[in-house]
Picture 1 (cartoon, rainbow, N blue to C red):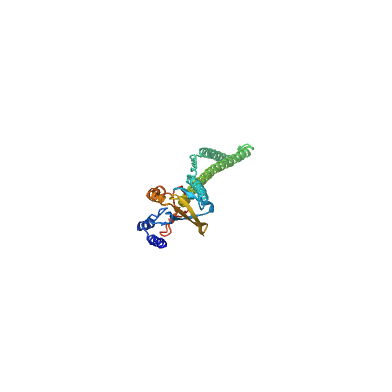
Picture 2 (cartoon, helix red, strand yellow):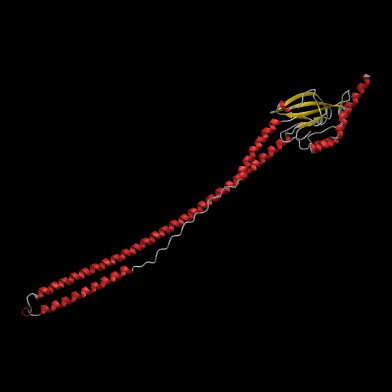
Length: 342
């Protein structure tokens, strides 16, 4: 009896040392969440022993204990805390993305600068007319003086005995008055000319002020254009910065999505009994648990026929490798989202 048992164990060990080439091809190409070997170790009571290696972040992620009976598809582990934390981060990222997607406010519209009114045409009619009037008056005064001078000269040529004594003094007084009239008229001419000059100077000053206002307006238009260009450049810089930040946030969101997808729940591929739970080690903030599942022969046979359907149904999960004692098939969970079945 002992020899027969030893021979059966030798045959089992030889068969377990062979690895299915299709399994190798699947592992190298697609790396499905669950990989099953065609040959499994069998206990003396006909049950298969499967080992699952699970990556957990907390002991609370493990949902079974030794001695528990599990059904096919029952949850073995679920990294709820990590998934909740990553989903909160993703929500925060989405809020930032939504804010950045709002359109950048453009610069305000250009305020138009009103044009300056043109100066009226220069006219000095009144001043010129006044100058002409006083000139005529001055000329008349000069002629009156000259006539009085000739009259006085003529009277002085007469003998004194023939003229009344008061004639010469009277005519001299008239001549003096005529001279004063000439002086007054000349003064009025100079005053009228001065007024004309002042009017011309005032016009020149108005034209100077008008040219200054035109220069100020041209400078204001140029400054406004420069300010507009700066505002447009600032808007373009903001747009580039917004696009860059959006790209960064989108990349972070994709990373979070990938992590959340990989944090799917691990489910049992077969019905069986949890025989052993072994904590193998810790890697950073996660640790690996080896879970031994005993599957009886009848259930394992039916489970193998349903394996292809389980693979397609559970393709959303990203954690887990199932390992048999000899083919070393394993299952591990890693960071991401999903409630797929393993």
